[in-house]
Length: 361
Image (cartoon, rainbow, N blue to C red; front, side, top):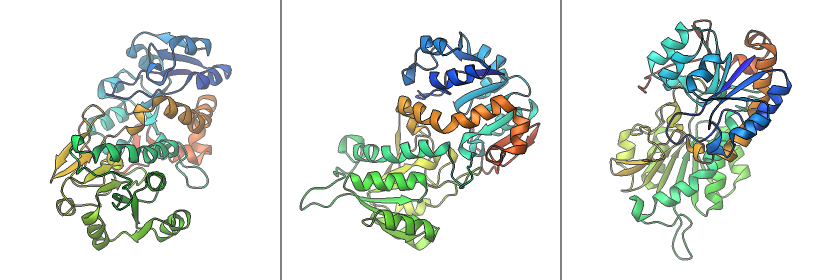
């Protein structure tokens, strides 16, 4: 199979679709791999490392997209990139098609592209096994993001996240107790913040309470959301419904009632966002102010720790990539439920995808 690894084109996306270690394994299994010149530089991988692993270096994205039977991406391709794909190709990546523009979906269907969404690959235990390491990274990075944004020079209220003896630490509210929420809770408690976790699933709250006795847990209701957001210095939106746009759980009215210059970090923004006032930002311009609150809504938070992210991604995704490459997508859809559940488009049909309020690119 011809496998393509292009350079990521979205702003401040330094990750790469596969590291040289993964390329070497695919090459040993008899596949031809085309890597775009400079694709791995952001993660610290040179063209020479890819060549030693068995890849051929291509000097244009059109060549990589056009040759590939199986294209390995991180971020969702731009529309012009989708146009370069040959009909019937397999596209794998963190696609988040539930919040993509309709013209992208139409193009995928027209060209009969099989879209394999890493964020929906689900193992036998119900875990989102490929998305999980990226979610862990997001949660781990939340304290350093919040600590910076709470500073006056970033527009914050001038609060030290950890507090000091005689001065209370910041009040942090984590909405959603999944992998991101759990990771963020651990990291925030480690940074010395006071943490409240709110989730609609009581068993999730029980697990959090057992693991983090210092965290306050609350069942997600409109009343409880109004209460916790009103006293929060930092609100972290970490709500995910696989294959669907993230539900809005914090309304504009709730945001308006928060303490002035509080921080909102909407980690769900790659699936449309779970806070009504959120809109996507970039690492170059990561924040905006709405209703007097500082919003941080960067979709690709792990993109700036690209080497760590690329290594951890290889560990999680390579078994699935190898199965598709060796056995073909049709066979894997029939025999592997983990992959079948992650197919968003196939043979001109939508699969495992609910689209609400799609965004424009």
